[in-house]
Image: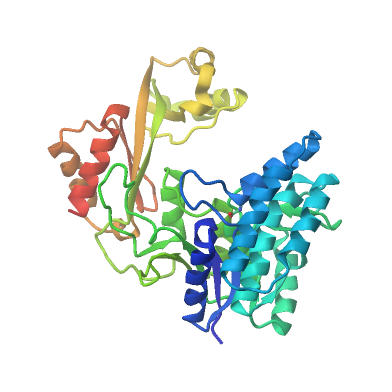
Length: 438
Ligand code: ASP
């Protein structure tokens, strides 16, 4: 028996029309057995997300401000969906109960979680699937962290009696029985937990884009969609700024080797992007997977003759950062040089103090600071063990007259990170894309 777990995001369930698309998708494949919905999201850029409105109700209630009007917006939205879908579900009783509990001082997590809860009730009725409350199957421990093993056991048990179910995203329960939510966007995590718990063959994450793009579309016009990438490549791209799945959503499925397929509810025929384990053979040798980058780094370059022979030099240097509570992103080094690449958000006003302490602790021959740097990662497992990839990259940059200020290649060879000035950031990304993709 093959099992697909499908998570549908907020825009996929924004109105009755979107619910219909979801039903067609679920009906299109009988393996789509466990469905994890978000709360209704934005219908247009001027719209309000249900989750935001629920938080607002809670904030009002806490300050004893009447919230009836805000709650009515939520109620109307759900009532409208139920009526338009022609369902006989009694949504009003659930709405009244939620309003009453928020007024009586229920927690922010309880209030926010009701968006997914109500979505789940409606979707279960509409699909003819059983409704399973996430509070029964998604468990947090006493410290408020996801208890993956306990959730797995609970899901496993439920699965035996419930071959098809809708399980709301975003929340679970604590050992004392309180509703608790994940961080914002956390339905992605629920989907991954459910996929892990029921032993899914695939975790489908349905959203409003046809997968992960090879580059930021605000920089490269119409970039290609990545068809397949590994978890590690995803991590590299996400870390360097590509917005994809909720970070924590990766680890339950990654550990179990369950592929994640990112799909578009509005274009269900598009194959989307599949995230696979590292063990998969590389389909396109010599190709790149994606390009991502971030601006606003500062490089501190330290030079000292015979640095390599000086015991404890690196430790003293890094301890300056540690004492100042600053972490570094990269540390390219030469025989007598070491550079620290630090995110400006980390550094804020500590630069002068750090330089002073490096001078004192390490006695360098020279200490230079290069502000306004950007880092760009070109990522691809197809690059590893392929001669000529770096040459091609740097030729492409040179042709566009981009001055590369720093080079760093991870030992896994799945990325080459370059440092350029902030002003060259966009041009450099376009140049790399053009070189490898055209
Ligand atoms: N509805 C929640 C939020 O807006 C969770 C989610 O959509 O994943 O953050």
